[in-house]
Image (cartoon, rainbow, N blue to C red):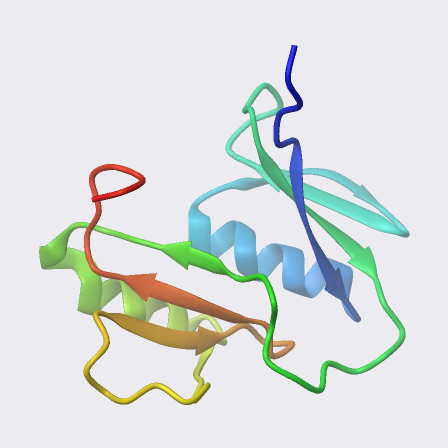
Length: 123
């Protein structure tokens, strides 16, 4: 059996706060909350979740890994505004302004994108 993706791990200074931010953004729940690990997901049996782990150092460069989020075309701008109201901010990582995605950063500065509506992983 090949390996499968279990968790995406995000380093955080404030695990409870950042995990609540992402749970709200994605409409997920906090599934497990410990001192050194918080796990969120749609439910405990979901194939993939996000795990928040403590980090001591500050983020100083662009992420090498980030999340891409999508929504229906008619909801895209409203969703961007909703996420900004939750504590995200717009981020400049060198984009030209012609991209089909919007770059945002979570409250700890981790970049993520809201991409054009997608119906498949490659389309």
